[in-house]
Image (tube, rainbow, N blue to C red; front, side, top):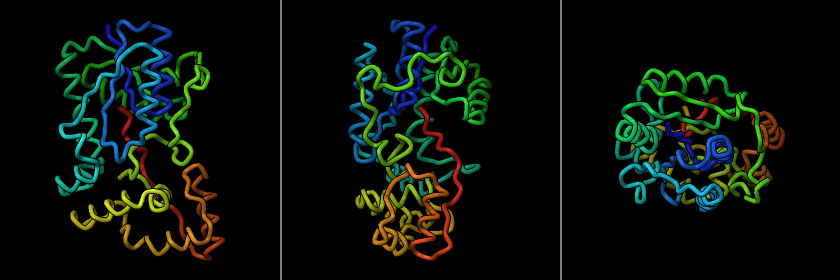
Length: 267
């Protein structure tokens, strides 16, 4: 039986890798990652993935989208001429992660002789249920150590490995310029990564649709510039309610973030 950790590069997936390693050892452990373009995955996330991998003594197994080293999420959606498909699933997630993941399982584990581990915690019951149902329908078993196991480690700092620096600004270690994120995320991008902001605008122009519901990045620029001039901190660490309250108070404008589903980029 192989133990496949969906090793996203985030702190939670690293903790799962460490818990599974402590329980089962490294001989049958697989750290499965989908590498993405260096322009949208922070270099320190890549450092973090390698540090934890080296600590465990298991090399990272990559199941990458073809052309991952030359295409980012914007190139992928422009090529397909759509941001989302079906019931609102982010197309970039499917092409860059879900598709390669399913192909890997089909080719390497057709007999389903594996357990797949995710970094969801006890507060993410809906995500646990959804992932269990999707993979269970295909005959795969899933486990969620952070939600259901007795924890032995709370932070990688306990083993001398600093979490990714991107956590100083963002809540997750997903792509910078996430196509499922809301206005607060994109405000951080506007302030800190003008190259990604401009590529986001380019993708909207090419596709003829907006990343954020009902408003384009171009239309958001005047507001975001006023927010920056008013001293609104560019961070996702401030809770959304508090963040947008600051904006309303400083700019005397009635605005809040749009509601988005949790990103499915978990593998």
